[in-house]
Length: 602
Image: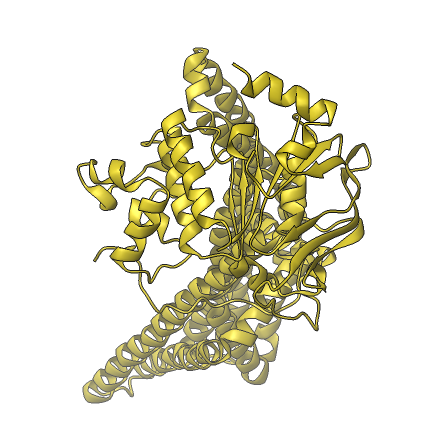
């Protein structure tokens, strides 16, 4: 197929509607969010785990009872071969049934873990895409991508540690064991219960130390990722200045500190394991001594002692598992919290409750006394009032830093003005549905980038169902068709990461074709011809003339030759509008005349 992406069409993206606040992003809060997610979105599989755990626990509890009967029958000489064979067969059958439901619980756990991971991974990714540019200006996209990737994996680990390691099944079995021994052997039940608080205390004390160290380790891990992505993202400059070894060394230094802390953690874990083994050994010895005394006093049979020893082993299993799980949870929950931290970010440009869908532009887009600043120290727009009439071509010119690109980004509502308003046929853009605005507008940036996909997929990005003729028409209009057809694979050519396999001019023409495919009401070009040679620039000027009257065009221009025939030219400097009018009228303004003299006179 001409435009196939190789994906699975029709796959529904599952998103979470559970609200997350910054205050919830703690160890306890993350666990609560995950349990809430499991219960809300995967209630029936979770109930299935509980039922499978109950069945597995009951059959694990029943098998030692049959073993007790065999031992007591052999001791008293009352066990026949047929009865003994039957009991042995039942023990094997019960073990298989318990193992089967154990596996069922584990498979359900795997399903739950992957589903919850996906739900939050997609939720965080959508939040990342939806957050306003003001947020993105303060964050590194590679870093955030790593947080989503690692956070999603951490969510899977947390869920699977709780459910997938069958901790729930083991604790259900422990509950049955304690309940039965309390009823049948109250004295021995105390021997089973005593290790539980001791285990928990040891686990809490040492695991707290491990988790504190893990916080530092996570920071180092974060720093390593940032160093890595910063280096590989600037690969050409690393090579240009011969810094391959220095970048590798900087990365290695962080990992060296990381491993030093890991070794200390391992010592703590070894100590924890040793203390737990001591507790287990002591309690086993206590059980044997008390059991032997009871057998000698004829208050307990040998078979019952075997039963209690088996039950004690069952009671130790979840405690051992709890120790390792708690330690690992401290490690991975912090990584998961970074994803939830992203999910808790506030989307300052989110649609208001009664947001309206923008209709086709009928009259004009208007800036009314707009003031905007990126920060308190960086003032960008001051009391700007301009109008963009439907079907006209408006050029915005001025020196670097004049505020031209900021005006364009405000026009497309990538930012909201701090004061004043921007209207689309008298509809304030802040009261419009963001999705409807995106359908009505298109942007071509100076430093254009492409997706690492085919040329056809890049052109049809705004309209993936477009046919071959539509794609080629847009390419021809952007004067890209000729060079595309000369490539070995034509429109099926993969352009490489960020379009690196194409020249700057070729990328720009593909970007123009991509924007034209969306058939926007408003087309904004931000220095769109800056990377084009003179011949291609002339072709783009012809395309602009062709689009005149069909689209409302706003062109931020450094080359005045591109826009001197615009219907209206806005001259900006230091965030203010100095003058506006057509080319002839603006020649009366000294700054515009000076810009023209620098560029146009030969």
